[in-house]
Image 1: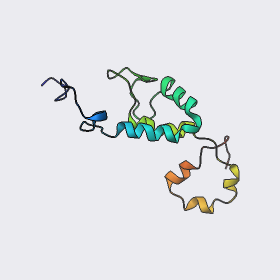
Image 2: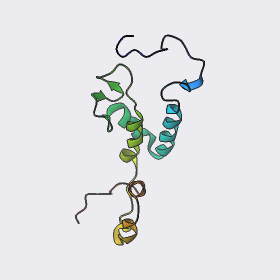
Image 3: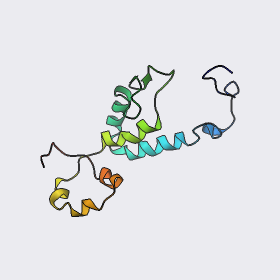
Length: 120
């Protein structure tokens, strides 16, 4: 078999959305990411089509990839998309940081981004 060739690529599959293939839930993951970014879909699309990949640092320009053939839309890039599109959090949250100390990283990220540069 040639380098980079995958077994079974020469036959069309009857499995919907490639269920039996390498990333069977990729379409479901993309739908979840679109739902998370539903408040800012226009900006999310702009980031995907004009930005670089936040996840892998491959040579990408929008969804064009200079390293591998085809579209570059990895799940890491999609998962990090919300960090670029989420709204700012209310600075009043910082009035008492004690509750924030008990939060996990994921919960803190879900609060939103910094509304402006801050000085401690």
